[in-house]
Length: 96
Image 1 (cartoon, helix red, strand yellow):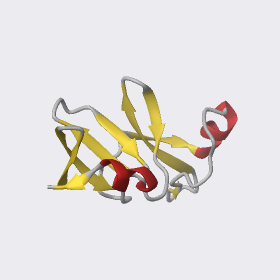
Image 2 (tube, one colour; image 1 turned 90 degrees about the horizontal axis):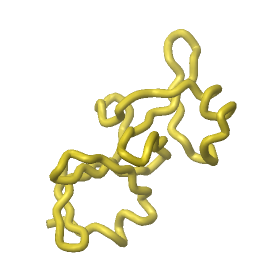
Image 3 (tube, one colour; image 1 turned 30 degrees about the horizontal axis):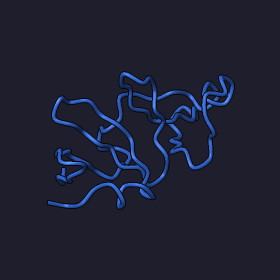
């Protein structure tokens, strides 16, 4: 992962891509929609071989954070991970 700096602390970050194992798990699309947890615009959706559509997520102290198209996965020194949209990433982080 490429390192970036934000507010005087370093993090590792990588643009999310399916198949790299960056997520903590997957939730069926029907559960995401049925539970109404979030706005579903631009969520990454993966269709499994059995036809079930799933959405990848990161789990941290704030709960489940579903990954959207163009999101970066941020890893802090304490191994806590977050998701940051590409629209905010360039404003908050600079390569070092």
